[in-house]
Every structure is written in structure tokens, then in C-alpha cells.
Image (cartoon, rainbow, N blue to C red; front, side, top):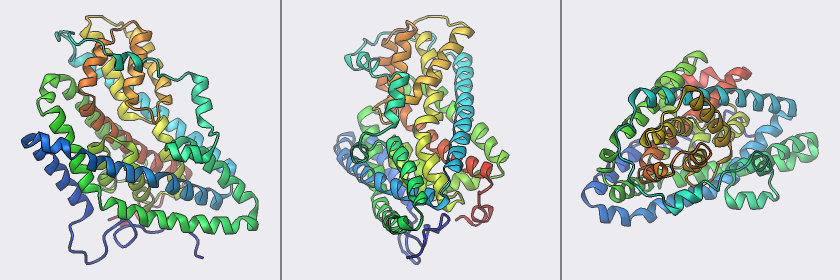
Length: 427
């Protein structure tokens, strides 16, 4: 059986792209059409749009059912191919260093914008605290709980729950052990190579449903919340999306220039996972496509399979930027003046506590409510944010995915294995 090449093409003529000569528009075009149709349906026929939400849920379930076997097989094969635990440790350290630098920039950018524009100043704090918001403050994990959460008690349990980080930890050790046994482990390696090829083909089938899922998700959001929700707290939404745009332009663009990756080629490469993440507000929904496109972009599969899912816990650039804006916004709502020192301490706290919310529903709000409680700020502010969280979540999730895709290229360039030829030929 042929070995799974870390740069094997899986694009327009591969398992996740349309076949040559197809009369259908490109998947990206279909997804954008679904996005536009969802907005129109939500604005003109909100009841119908909301009733279509089960279609979005079906799409998300289809995505979740392929993540664990796809991630496990590709990561194990990639690590078994290197057979070097020291190399994986080096990759992990480099990834964590980049993650911390990127999230620090996100925090500082958010702090600068929220203090300059003052979106919470002059807005009456009238929303009552809700039981849901109060309960969120109790979900924050401690440091030891975060460490314990890394290690699965059962790989089957981790796969069933869709715990990406635990699958990564198990797959990393399994891949190293598989490489260590040499030829005796070759049948297992070949089996997992076949599984990986099958799962990429499977991903292609699931992605054909993406335009419908995107349409339903966007329609339900607009139909349920209404376009008017953007006006209710328009200044906050505007500041948030301005921050996300500046982060994309300055940080993502700057890092792309630094590692000699054409910025617009990179954006074109990740357009499908970006749109899926934005419309569904789910990083998991974008993961299979992100794994595929970054491998086709020239990043070795073992780096893609390790860095990308790890970043879902440690490199939440969009969520980190949101937290810095939202926490100071709540203080402004309550008329509380935070000194520079207090804001710095709060940001350091948020930087640490945000690492433990991977897979937690409304993870950013969980961290925010815990921080508000710790610093004596009113939970009523979180209740207000809860009303527009879906609108904010869409943008921050898309930037989370973008930042993690770039992180794979950063680590690959740092390791000297980024394939410039594939980048130049990417279509």
C-alpha cells in the first residue's frame, strides 16, 4: 500500500474537491450563496428561517462524527513517519511560544480599542442577571483541572465526547509508540494510512452539504435575533469587528509577511473553513476542511494535525480579543473606572483562564463571567452580552480558525519544512 504523503494532493482533483469538468459552481461559491440566502430568509421570513435550524444541526453533527477518526489517523501517521518524540516536543514548544505571542497582541489590541472608543459609556445597565449567566461563573476550570483534562481516561470516551485535545494527546503517544516498534507496527501504520484516505474522501462528501448547513445556520441566527440586534449595541459590535479586522490585517498579515507566505494566497486557501466557522460559530465545523487545506497549502500533515487542534485550546485569538473588549465594556457599563494596572492584571488572568475552555459551550462567556466575579464587576453586563453573543461569536470563531491555520504555517517555516512550491501552485 502506498504511504500517505504529507503533501499528497487532496484538492480539486482529490477527495475534498469537485471532480474535473463538474457543472456545479465551486464549493466556495456555493457556501457564499448559502450565506446570502440565509441572510435574506432570516430578514424576510424569520419564522421559516428559524424552523430550518435542524438542517444546520445535522451539518454540525455530520462534521463532528468525522473529526475524531480523521484527526487520529492523520496525526498518528504523520508522527509515525517522523518517529521522533524530540521533534514533536520541539514543534509543541514552538507552537506554544507563537500562541502566547499572538494572544498577547490580541489582548493589547482589544484593550486599546475599548479604551479609545468607550462603547459602554453612557449605556444604561438595565438587563437583569440571569441564572444562566450566574451558572457560567461556576464552570471555570482550575489550573490542575486543565492539566488533568489533557489526559483521557479512555480514547473511546474522548472520541465520543468530541474532546479534540484529548484525542491529540492520545494520538501523539500512540504515534511515537508505533514508530518505536519499527517494522512490527507497519501493518497498523498502513491501516491508518488507508483510514486517513477514506476519511478525507468522507470529508468531501460531508462538505457537499455545507452550503445548506451554512444557509440554515445563518438564517436561524438572523431570523431569531433579527438584524435590529446589531443596532441595539451597535457600538460594541462595531468595535469588536473593527478589532477582528485590524487583527487580521496587522497581526495575521504581518506574520504572513514575516514568514514569507503571500497573505492573499493564504486568505484564499482558508476561505472555506473561514466562512464555515463564521456562519456556524463553530470551530469544530471548520476543522476537517482546515486540516485539508493547510496540508495542500504546503504544511506537513504531522504539523497540521498537531498544531491546528492544539490551537483550539491555546490560541483563541478572536476569543481573547473579545474578552479584553467585553471585560472593560462591562466596567464602563457599570461606571467603574479601571486603572491601567487593574486592566493589566485582568488581562493576565484572562490569558491564563481562557486556556481551559476548549469544548465548553459559550466558552468565552464562561471565562468572562468568572473574571467579572473575581474582579467584583456586575454579572448584569454579561447578561447583556449574552443577548448578542451569537453575533459576536461568529466573528471571533472565524478569527480563531484563521489564527490557528496561520500557526501551522509559522511552525512549519520555523522547522524549515514549509513547501514554498506548493504555496506558489496553490489553487
